[in-house]
Length: 318
Image 1 (cartoon, rainbow, N blue to C red):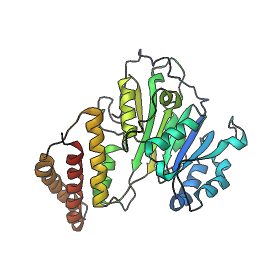
Image 2 (tube, rainbow, N blue to C red):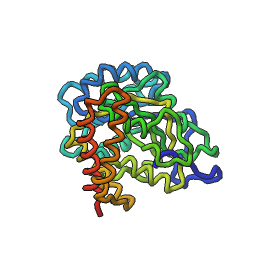
Image 3 (cartoon, rainbow, N blue to C red):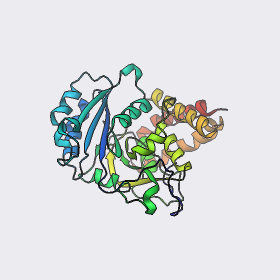
Image 4 (cartoon, one colour):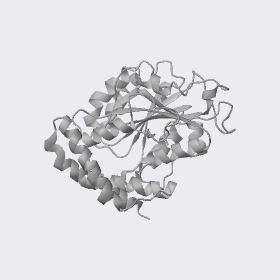
């Protein structure tokens, strides 16, 4: 998964629609009590040089005024020349919290979207500058018949928040580098709906798999690559986004991701992760933390790494 290419002479299947630079763009944001982030997010969206034609909020039961705050400014976040009527330019759709999964809420957003291109942005992902949206959708806004016509989706860089735990930051730097990787390096970047855009026509052919609790975006991207399409990585379309997971949450996340890899790709994990990979990674962390002047964080890093590898082993054991 990640960045890949196909023969320029290859063409997408008949159900796959290509759009030009007049493509209608829907921005979908999934929310749940997004109040802590809206003070920074809404001005960033209002400052975009290329604004979406439609803003669609998929809310799963906010009780902190999130919906009202977005509706109050929604029209200022949308392109003034949007082809949609004013009453249709900013809409809220809801999903009960008891029914929420990432795949289900994303599918709801794509189903309700009226744009040709559907942009996904997490509520806690902050675009770094006013050119974010324009750069993100640039690989998609092409004319039919060009070698770019097989681009099914694109995703942007994620940059960790300054105070995030160092091993989390390091992983984000590996997964979402500052420069585009060679086409041959397909595993170096991970498609993520934290900061992405996809053709709605590609989604109509294959929605996100609602049987998956996690990593449905990566599985979808892998299937697009298998169809002979491209997934573009756009490091210039960057957002600030990261999490400080607890030890328990780290183990659970890694277990879920490993289980998905086993189910979708047949990849299994050995118990050697705990006896070989964990000590090796822990020693590497010690050296890097020393170079960063953060040696006091090493005990926590060792526990964090054990949780990672333990979760990977539990989810991926055959």
